[in-house]
Image (cartoon, rainbow, N blue to C red; front, side, top):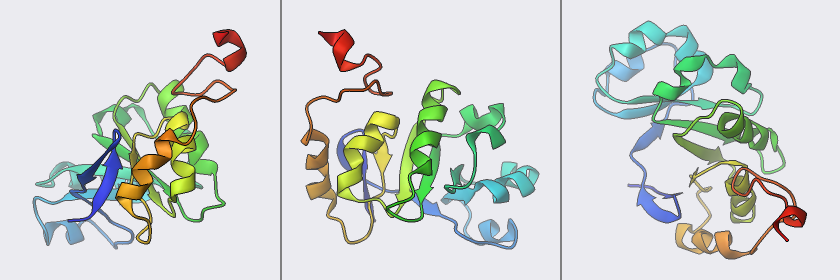
Length: 166
């Protein structure tokens, strides 16, 4: 079972990321499994997914917008945000928007090209789960959250900027 970081701990990952599929029939081949499906797949097959005998959550690619979601986002146990490349930071904005504008309280998971150096900053934007890239050691990555003791600007994790905390 693969591991991920969730709420500051290394835990088993019971979700499977569905990258590509032609239709919901792929889910029927493996009933009872937890799937993270792309936003476009969920939009196209919402009715069929409601009948699935397992948990369904969604993932947004970096070009997807949080505004493309409706109020049913609060029904999902988690929303994953994809980082297709280390240098693509659009998912940081999506995480912050989910937490601050949409008041999403569930798990926000970083998936894709997720590296240790990003984890502290991802947490500051609202991520609380991290599926680090295959070549990253999960236990080593846990130490990333202690790399910095504070930040200057306001974040999701610390909404008061440093100059107001003095």
